[in-house]
Structures are given as structure tokens and as C-alpha cells.
Image (cartoon, rainbow over all chains, first blue to last red; front, side):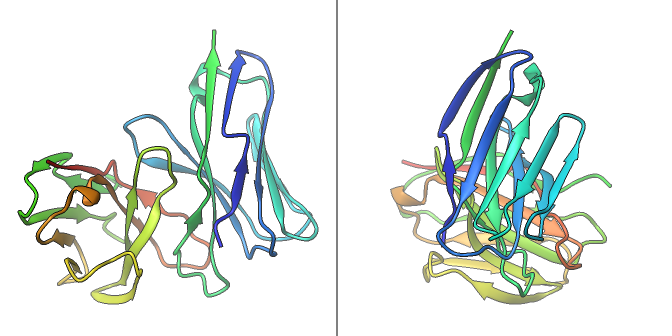
Length: 111
Length: 114
């Protein structure tokens, strides 16, 4: 089942914060976050596995709620380099790496 | 670690022609994946290999599509009798195969069928 992302698009000024949500009607085994810049490969950001987990590096962090039905990606004090399309994906317990991705959230950071 | 490389970057073909794409994964990775991405959408899984064995194919992969990984290293994706609906970005990714290991994507091959 494909996770649903919201919002579809966000426009920010440098230094502003953003939250991107990834939801499912059923509990997800895992949530993988990727960022893709225009014309480039998707790049892995982080993976969350446990309900209630929070993880982050630099000013990009993510959480996974207790029911494992929603994950949120937090971008604080955004930089121009954060621009791109963010995808969440979910795998199965068998860890095949066959990810089902959401439709993506496009983030544009303006000076 | 030179990353995942794909060739060609762009391919324009006429409807009905056959095309073949190549993917070279990160050398120590034993899993290799093919995804397809259309404009405004997330990548969609097509198939994956563990070493040379093709373990799963999506229902999206019609009989016109075939993928190989003959020696467990590089992989090829062939599309026969291309249709305009095949126009998309074809992404290759590899992983170590360890539990919850990330996918490392290549820059993709953009196919345009005219």
C-alpha cells in the first residue's frame, strides 16, 4: 500500500522550518526517507524502524509515531541546498529492499 | 566507492524499437534493483536481484521487459517493442543486502519513445 505524503509542495525562505508527513492507513514496517534533486539520483537520508523513534542529523530529523502509521520529516533553518523532492518509502518485514514510495513532496527554498 | 552508474543517460527511440539499458552497481553490493519513475511520481519497483538470481518481478513488468544480471555484477534491462507509455526514467539501485540497508541509486536512464 502506497504511503501518502503531505503537503505536495512547499515554498520556503532560507532559515524557515518545514515538516513533511508520510501516512498510511496500516502500520508500516519501516519508513525510509530520500531526497531527489532535479535530474539526479534519490539520496538516502534516514530510516526509522520503531514506533516512537526519532532520528536526525544536522538540521534534518524524522519521527515515527507509536502506531507506526505516520512519519514526519523535519527540516529546520532550511538552506538553499535542501531544495528538492522528498520521498518516503516503506519496506516489508522480509527486508527485500522493495520500497513502495509515496508520491513525493517538492520543497523549494528561496534566498 | 564510485557509486551506481547507468548507461546511457538518455535514450530516444521510435515506437516498436528495442532498447537496452545497463547498470553497474557498487562493487561490493549483492542486491540490485530496477525502478521506474514518471514525472511527479515516486520510483516504482520493477524487479530485483540477489547476486545473479532474479528474486522478484513487479506486475508492472510486462512480457516485453526482461532484466538480467549474468555474473552477479552489472545488470541489463531490455524493453522490446517499445510503446509511448514506456517513456520514463529508469533507475537502478544497489544495496549490501543487510537488513534495512539503504538503496544507493544511479542517476537513471531517461527513455523517450516517439
